[in-house]
Length: 215
Image 1 (cartoon, rainbow, N blue to C red):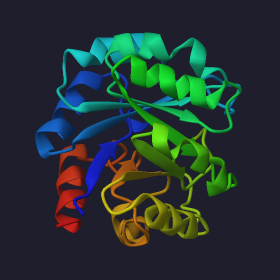
Image 2: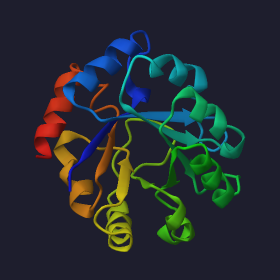
Image 3: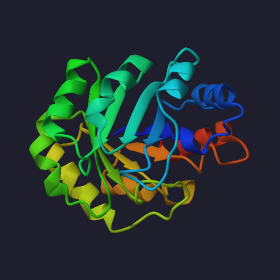
Image 4: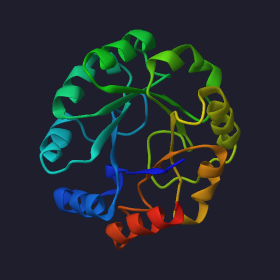
């Protein structure tokens, strides 16, 4: 299965976002992962709709919005209008999960569901028929630069068994070139990398190195 690379904007230099996004896109990154945090569901605050809207005209990448917010049902329409192509919500959020996923789909967007490392895969199974992507967090949502939690590999493998060979399973957190093979071997096919790409000295070269490693 081909691997899709999703550099995480959270690790980019916010003084030159358009330049950095353009560089990773030209290097071959397919998705731009957009970590939206509200300080409630996760202990951090990041960016929101205005940043996504401002970048939309500067990129043709798939905008992959990861809503780490407690009440995503209130905001999915705004993120859809801002240009998000995939909108992922957390199973741990306070929204009605099924209704919110349905709303995302009704807006013509792909729907994703995310699980923190301590959330059992069984919590996502009732929604498998509503989602286009399952996001398995390999660190606890909220901060970049954390170490990959190896215990999630079993969850990734079981998700791949249940969802089949073609379904998109995304892994987010602690993935670098040196351990890229770990989530991929477990069954992930959409790889989020923040510090490893935008946090490197040369993000475009980092994308090329990641892509070469998955050939």
